[in-house]
Amino acid sequence: MGSPTNSAQNGGIIGVNNAFTPASCAAAKVTTFNASGTFTAAATANVDYLVVAGGGGGGGSLGGGGGAGGYRASGCFTPSPTRSSAVPVIATTGYTITVGGGGAGIGAPCATQGGGSSGQNSVFNYNGSTITSTGGGAGGGGPPGGPVQPSGAGGGSGGGSPGYGPPGGGAGSGNAGSFPVSEGSGGGTSPSGGPPYGSGGGGGIGGAGSNAGSPQAGGAGGPGVANTITGSSVVYAGGGSGSPYGSATAIIPGPPGGGGGGANPSSPSPSKTAMTGGTNLGGGGGGTGEIPKSLAGGTGGPGVVIIKEPAYSVAASAPGVWSMQSLYSNVRAGTWTN
Image 1 (cartoon, one colour):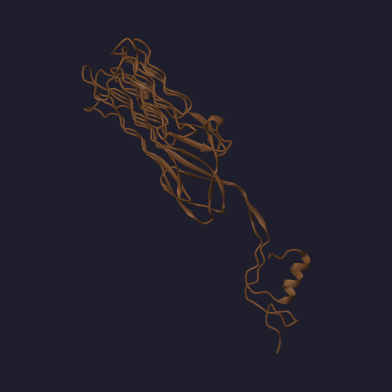
Image 2: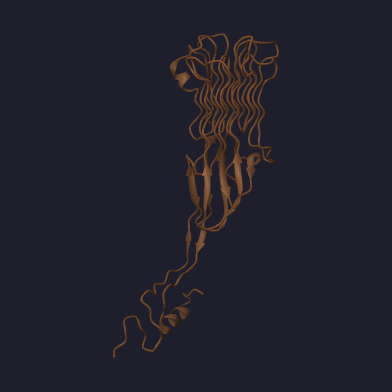
C-alpha cells in the first residue's frame, strides 16, 4: 500500500497539521483608553503607563478654578520629577481600566453660587495592585456674606480659592493620594486684603495655581506637562483658571494641559466656551464671575489611561505531529524549536 500524504518513506509518525512558524519579533504597542474598559496583555512584560484622572469643576460667584486630575506616569516619556517605574503584566490576562470623568462646574442659571464638584479617579489594575490617580479638587465659590464653599477642595491637584474666600488662603492641596512621586499641585489663594477679589487658579501637575491678584485679577491655573507615550507630545493635567472680578468682559486664559479659562457672565462667547477642561486631558474647569449670576463654572475634563507594551519575541512553533524525516531536516537546518 502506498504511503499516506505528508509521510516519509522511513516509517516515521505522520500528522495532518505540521506547519512550522519561525521565531519573530512583535512591535511595541500603545493602547489608549478614553473611557473605561479592559486591557489584555499581549505578553508577560513590564509595561509603561499614563494614568490621568478627571479634572475638578470650577466654582461660581467669583469661583476658583478646578484642580487638574491626578497625573501618574512611568518611563522616559515625561519629565523626570513625574516619573515612576513600569509595572508587570501577564500575557493574555485582562486588566480593568477605569477612566475618571470631570467634575461639574457650579450650574446655571440658578445654582451659580458655591463650589464645583471634584473629578473622578482613574485606575489601572494590574496583578492585584493598582495605579490610581485622584480626581482634581473643585474650585471654591460663594456669595457675599455667606460662603457656600469658602475654599478650594483638595485632590490630585487642588482647587483654587474663591474671591469671597478667606483672605490670603482657602486653596485646596494637591497629591491627595500621598504618593512618593507627586500626582499634582495645590491651588492658588485669594488676596490677603480681603474680599471681594479675583479667585485663585486650580493646581496642575506642572505647578501650583497662581494666586489671585489684588484687587481684580484672577489667578491662572497651574500648567500641565508634556508626555510622549503615544509617539506624539501631548500636554496633560493643567488646572482651571480662577474668575476675574471687576471688568464684565475680563477673561483669565487657561494654561497648557487642558485647563479651562476663567470668565465673567458678560465675557465673549468663545471665552465662555473655553471654560471647560480639555477632553481626555484631565484639565480643571475655569471659575465663573459674579454679576449677573447666569454663567456656569467650567466642567472639568475627563481623564485618560494609556498603556505601552514593549516589543517582544514570539517563539518559533511546530504544532501537529511530524514525520521523522521532516523533524530531522528541520533540526539539521537549525529551524526546529524545542
